[in-house]
Length: 410
Image 1 (cartoon, helix red, strand yellow):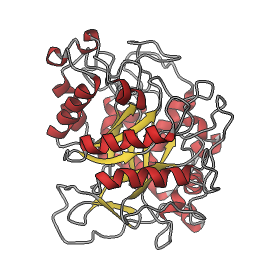
Image 2 (cartoon, one colour):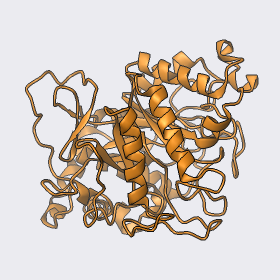
Image 3 (cartoon, rainbow, N blue to C red):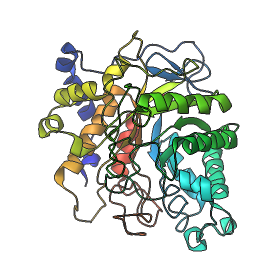
């Protein structure tokens, strides 16, 4: 039995009661306002937009993205993982069966630039895809997800095709010498043109985990006007580029320092040419937290509010939704010994409870049951954070899936 098996509904209610102390400090997520209309909210419909701190659907009903990250297309393999293990349609159906409604799909600038043929061995379970180039397979993945009624957030994960993210391997900013800002903008324009008419694609996350880049000797900034480092200004340019072609998409913008926080936004909120399009993104993992935060829900909520929750404060010039586009920890496989530090398991439990309390949109990293190629990776090895088993055939930890499903909101 894993800890999620015992993570019962009464336990969730008890945890929710603990946040009362944090509310006295103004540290909890503001309560969701009622839907804008009395429309039927059981089947959310795109296009989506933003109203205050909420994402809303075509009817004005509040929407929660409950997502997974499906990596691989951003890697040197140029294709999502698992297509060598299971049919594409089955993988898409599994995502839906897990209670998820959104998939964040990473891609690299090198994928767009080179668009190489995908190696047949990476498509062993999908012979119909053999002979296709990277973007054509990416199309088929988006199509399969759309047929399951899933939404897709396109994520420009990095410039060079590789694993992500550390300092020494570069790609910390939205531009590199090989892929300058003009190329980044052109590739976003290309992606918006290619997928702007696809009903499943609803958002663009402009860049993953902006961070210091020692290969360039640069540290990112927010709002200082320095062209090479000002991520706020670059995101405004990127958002405008996407919206010029796909005006119905939402624009997702992460903060600095690996998206660990959204500081600076209250003082200098990002401005897009269209209102109701902006969503901020944060990432959260065990190593961001002090032990005290993982030991007490009120302390955790206070830290979350300080890092990113404050941008949801209603009625402010900076008010916007927050999408936790990456979070995750080690998954426990039945009968297998734990292989990760204890805090990785504790964090997963604590963060799942936080999602129940807050109702924030989120995406687990990752869906993948095995690793793709990249630095520090072993292609085909077990993905320790993966939601799927190494054969990609079933959930590695069904109790986790059920716990997330119980906390799902519209």
